[in-house]
Amino acid sequence: MWHLTFATAVGDVTIDSFPCEIEELSRYIGKTGLLDATIPIPNAQVGRRMKDIIGGEGRLSVYAYRDGECWWGGFVDNTRVVSSSLGAVLYVKGSSFEAYVDRREHREDTTWTGVEQTQMARRLWDYMQGTGPGSSIGVNTNIPTLNTKARDMSWLRSDIKTVGSILKEVSNRVDGFEWAIDCYNIGTQRHRDLVVGHPIIGRPETAVTLEYPGDILTYEIEGDALDGATSFQARGKAPDPVGKPGTPGNKDGTGGSGTAAEKVPPIMSTKAFTDDGLHAVGYVRIDATVDRPTVTEVATLDAWAELALEMRSGPLVLPAVVARMDNITQAALGSNFKLRINDYPYPEGPMGEPGYEDIARVIGYEISPAEFGASDVLKLIFENPYDKDNQKRAPD
Image (cartoon, rainbow, N blue to C red; front, top):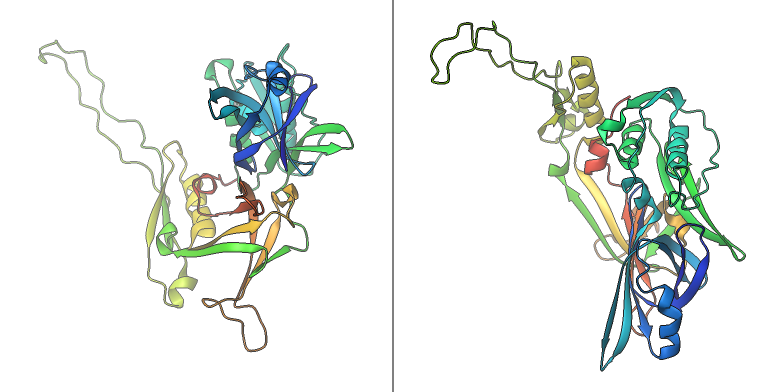
């Protein structure tokens, strides 16, 4: 059912394909996914075919196919051969192509003024793939021009910035964008595409419906009051110490003149931003402070506190779902799913309305191998507005 196809990372020339067992396979928006798979080596003929695969870490790419559909593409990071009286196997570990941005440094002094933000993503990928031998991994960057925010950015070669850190800095904003690398086939032709979405990737007009009982095998719905808060303030950078400079003293502490510098407290937002609507319906007040130690403007701190109120106010209710793969494709990444549940905790209503119904957006998936006689399943990772990445999403 599952096959791994190996190709050259540079040039994408196919080498060979082998049936495999998937131990772990994951994919996320704008974040590195992982592959952990095992390929049996039942005879010398298969062993000979593997001569270009074994030891191919750092120069090979690998694609995971399920029933002919590509679900994952990335780099071969590690190979390991294990042989015993029970047989021989090749273990393969890999990272999805999204990992490339964290493996490359931007080694040019750069200033961008008034550049549309998604085109910054294209420029960064074009830079990575245009810096000489070994740099191009064949990702198509022909993304459409979008009418989104124009931004200014600059950095020096001496800053030693990875492309990933720059891409996160420009994309991880309230009015930012999302990106991923899609791998797919059209006929026998394989493609690697940079996909950019503003403000998000996906979100079809009609959400895909998953039901329990049905395609949903297990679910969890957790509510937590302490993930959020109802009143937010923000703390910034402490101004430099002030004092009257003096003459240097002796090593023993004698001599010298002047006044010792006095510490100045960090600047704060002008006020706390509070969710009076939740308090009016009975929610207890929970306070939180957003720390931004590099911010030097009170107005910017006000924006951070107000953003925290908008994104993190009140309890977090987050579903987790494990579902059959049969009716789901890799297009699930970035899409909305309508979860509909009827069971003992959420009994059907008197007019047949679902006991639980909500829409959640998929930002990743993790595939688990099928046990004998069963179907493959995947865990859908739904967007969590209170997670660390979203908490770092900067106001414009």
